[in-house]
Image (cartoon, rainbow, N blue to C red):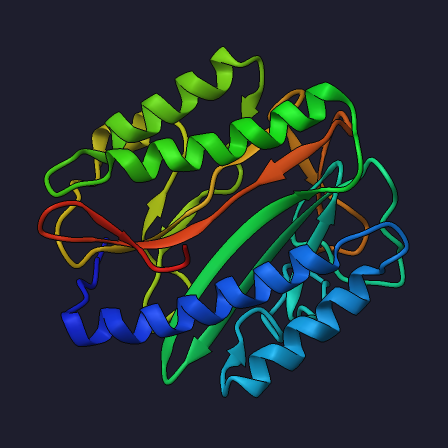
Length: 257
């Protein structure tokens, strides 16, 4: 594992990228409504990104297996779709939850964030799922500080989610971030033997994309036929929140708040 610490100048460049990400997610949150298509959301995200002089981070990322390169600027995942949903002419409906993941590269530095939006009035348990996922990201951010062990934070995240009757996805985790979208370390939202054996000790200059993904039912997920979209195996809803953050000498700085 080779963790690249960031200096003050690099962090400020990442902050500017993170600001664009937040502006785009805020705008898309205003647009999310019944009848709006995920392709319309994608077009607005790309327009704003390019107008700001940035590059859409996800567009063109190579796919797994026979899946082609990712064709869009945002990942738009609805209800039982966990992550990597491809924007389409599918219209958002009353009672949906829509998870939007978006990232940019600006002047060589990346920002990445995600948010789940509630449309209308879904079932109470679905609303609680979104609240818990938002809360567990805040819990993790609040525990970040120099010398903290990530296993302690991951354990607190897992215990909170499972205590609320939901499950933490194991197949996808957070990641380091900087001049590349994916850098070391891997940042899980649960405790494993691997994490306990190779724990991450937080230190100033460490930049991470922390992104809990929480399922209403079981943790198991699978790929849809398009080779990109990840769905829950039991087809129950899933929620996703993410921030890019950096550890400071006295705590944490959220670059996509």
